Image (tube, rainbow, N blue to C red; front, side, top):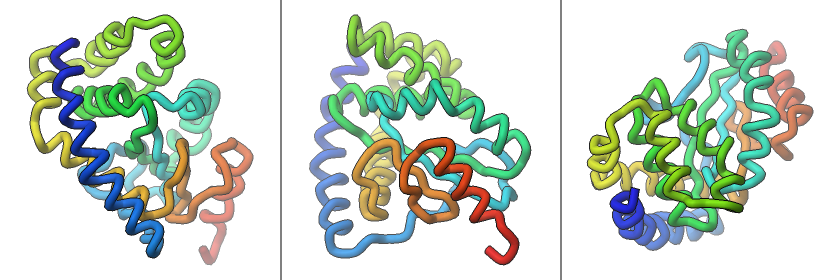
Length: 211
């Protein structure tokens, strides 16, 4: 994984200079609507679900890991598996940004159907990697979970399109008002917090007749 770390130093610079700075300026001037879901997004659930929940998260954010470990599978069973919610995960890098960028790229570069498996793997082992290391083992676990050969993952991380996709997603998220991770939008409306109670109330309100 040392090659991935070297490649991501260039990726990080592009993200911070070209993407986030521009996004912050836009957000300060005027908030934009949360971007519509497209084929470029990573999505779970019924595409025709009445409610769409978008999470902006970082693979190195402790609060994101806490939510993923404590709530995601209960949320999935209650809302996604029952067809009530279409769930979308979008990248928002946080410090240490180089590690966040590496992890985000690895998740994107696995097999598409394994994306959420990689996200869960990264969140599950985030604390171990942060406190005990080595970070390379954390990356290795994520590559295995992604189901593609390591050499293909390296090539994908090196592809400028990977950098551009993360850059664009972050900039649009910041322009929509994302200032922390995790941040959730329910049918385009930012929730007060990411607790199951707040999300459930927002989903119920969004699904109510006449909404």
